[in-house]
Amino acid sequence: MSGTTTSAGGPLLVEVVRPLSLEDLTILGLETEVVAGHTCKVIMLGDGIDADLLRASIASRLDQALPLRLCLCETQGEPCWALEPNLDLDHHVVVYDEAGPLDMAGLRSAVARIFEQRLDRARPLWRIDIVPSLAGGGSALVWRIHHALADGTTAMRVAAAALWDPAPGSPAPHTVATTAAAAKKHAGLVARHHFDGLRAAAREAPHPWRRSPFNGHIDATRTVAFTSLELEGLRTAARATDGATLNDAVLAVVAGGLRRWLEERHGHIGAVRIKVPVSLHGVAAPGDDGAAAGNRDSFFCLDVPLAADPVDRLRAIRHATRVRKEGHDAQQLDALMRRLGHAPQLRSFAQRVLTHPRSFALNVSNVPGPRQPVHVLGVPVRALYSIAEIREHHALRIAVVSLSDTLNFGLTADPTLVPDVDLLADHMQADVTTMLARLEYA
Image (tube, rainbow, N blue to C red; front, side, top):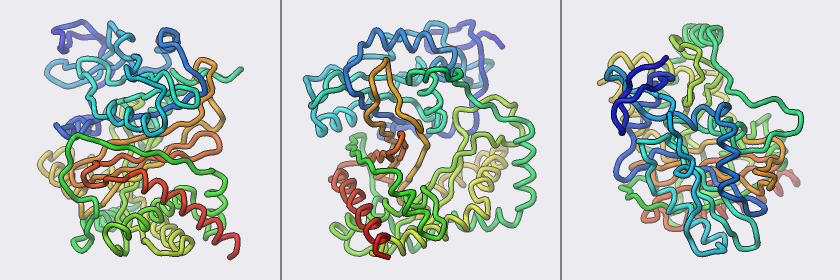
């Protein structure tokens, strides 16, 4: 539909795509002077690429990547997403002005500085900074996209549609829309598990006895770190441990790294409470109109033990995640927050409770990326990392994304509270070696 819509440039006749969802409004409301609202993908390439050619490639594929054309507007006083009528790709795809070539430490510093900068809300909420030269060869794309525009799953779909070179003979990428049948399934699930919903809410309530080592006031400065792990090794560890999942193994590795890091700085801590996002794409909420949403996820929390033995740690995590999956905690919490959407004060209170540092210490997300190697303008992608924003009293966040046969970890931190996030990444790498050796001799 079209309508007279107010944007930063004044009244325009634009095509309104959809109203902002509760998730969109909540995410936009989280942005403050010290908290940015975007996520970031760091795409490391095997060679340099030309900015004009990248702009032209994206322009030719915008019809497959709707989020890249969406801007914030108002129609009849209501916030909405509308199509930007004059998308200026010279603004959205830029060359990072920094003396190079950059080594890994220099790239990390550049990514952190770029990440700290805010996206212009008068334009579609994304930008790609091309880092033209890396030590040892290659280049990097630092792609920021606002979390209100796209969660991790949607961002990977957009990358497939607009960035990765299409595989020969592959169909055009598309966004999977939710359906009325899925909404009915979701409603039935919640109805059948009413008492499980109460149990889920109890599991997610703050734990007054659980202190967070990352609870403190943050500023707008960030540091980032990266590490990559071989995917098959973690799959093997998971399969060999009570039928654990790959995500269970990811949490065990994070816990192992935290154990080493925390012992050096805080002494022994028995467990850390972790928030685990859960994608609900393909499972519509009652009342959805079938349009593909940019954000569709929920979460559960669990106390992750910091046991010295990595296999014991993985078994405990497997048990905890199984309880939450069988209780449909993520779906129950999603349904609860949607019901509270009709009572804004109660919803606001619930959000404060669920984001309290006693509810969780840090967020660890894991999003499937490309299963096969990918290219950008014919240049191979050597590595793909994701970093996500932290929040007040949550000074560390870890985002994981897969690429072909690797799992790539991106760590974001406030340097005053987590001054050596790169050392934490090294500890996680070391823990995988210990876990695999332990299983080999079990």
